Image 1: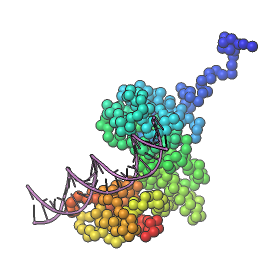
Image 2 (image 1 turned 90 degrees about the vertical axis):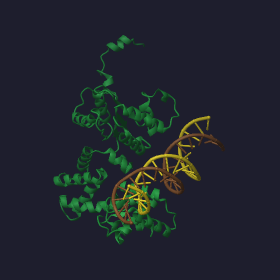
Image 3 (image 1 turned 60 degrees about the vertical axis):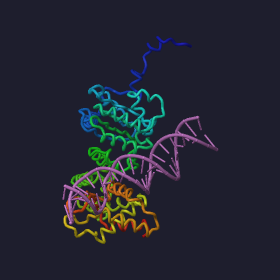
Image 4 (image 1 turned 135 degrees about the horizontal axis):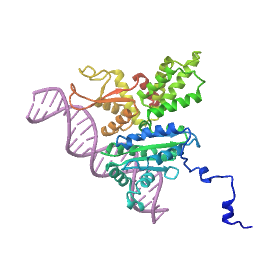
Length: 385
DNA sequence: CCTCCACAGGAAGCGCAGGAGT
DNA sequence: ACTCCTGCGCTTCCTGTGGAGG
């Protein structure tokens, strides 16, 4: 039997307002989320004042209100500042650098209705917009779905360096804590903030350790060491786990500063080993050359004004060429060798500094970032020298 | 002051692989 | 299946630069 609309509307139902229960609904007040909202606001506010933008990643299991929180924040910010815009993207749909840029730019660039524009074009357009003192906040929901995330992060952080006025902030949302492991170290360090690091630590400690077994000062030390090192959460967690293991092996009940300190040395070597083993061959050869000369002594070691342990770019390249000959490989050009040095520095395996007084000409001085014996050992095994 | 040194790092271009479009 | 395009890893060429040395 047919029921009229009036009858349906008049009938008292169980629901007061069905839309409230829809997953897309954003309630006016989010209980227990005020703290989080404040944090996000504090991270975004410099961006709105036209200062250097910051990035942030929210993570947590589905249904914990990440998307909801961020939508609330968007509502509050919308229209507060001129020359400012927020873009919410679900990366399940916009899952590549190209698609995301295209989606963001569409409202500004009418020609984009047609496809067929290259990435450089999109890049230029974005740069153009940001340069008009425009602040952009890009929210990437389900960020782990993006195929070329490293490139995207690199592009966006790089564009921030190039703009004169505005800038772009990235807010990533992810369900998986593990997704960060898939990130390039460079992207990682530009994405993570210290506050996030602390949050990760506390959350993980609660989940992974018995109550109160880690002394407060040990946690502080871990955070301090990590911040000083790279700010990489992966490092902090490894440190804690190792410290826990070492304390356990000694039959201790609590994890103290000394355990963390002892763990640091071990973790450093492990992490180096991990990094090195995933390095392309030529990078490894260059690194080996650096370790070798460090151990045998630099040709210029006795030069005044040069700090001990620093090597000359030129002598390393010569050593590298010799090693290649020994391995029956064709050495790469000097130009590309310099890029290798950049990569190695980026990974924290070496440190470089430009030469100054006391050195003829203009060159780069290179120092190995870990114990040379360790590095030589690790690479030797890998390369089979 | 000029010149040389010992590089730095940008620009152009090349061969190749993988993906998109048709 | 075919072409076309793009990115990648790399080479070659070239100009720039700050200090040493005469």
